[in-house]
Length: 123
Image 1 (cartoon, one colour):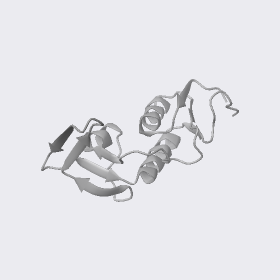
Image 2: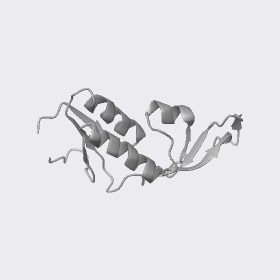
Image 3: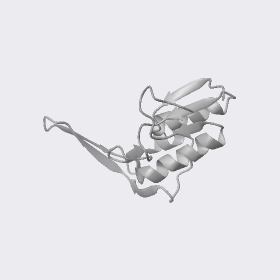
Image 4: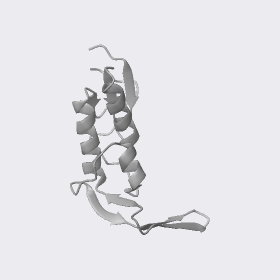
């Protein structure tokens, strides 16, 4: 298979980029070092803007809860709170969200290879 673009990492950014590039007719391969999507720890909160940018319709399949505020704490103890009564964002089931993005990338023509260590890719 001829490959035009290799995307390293099947996180939200990598999957969204792969989908966009594939939909423009390029042959895209996504390499992910983990065996399964969504195993990297994170807060699992995203803004509504993030969902819109990823061109994913909000879905109860992967949204656990809508949130109107968030607090961010720095290691030095300082914090910032953000509040938006109209709904600032969502708490996600990250694995299901990434599976949704991966399906959309694959539908656009991207090929996803899991459990790929750097420098060891074999199609």
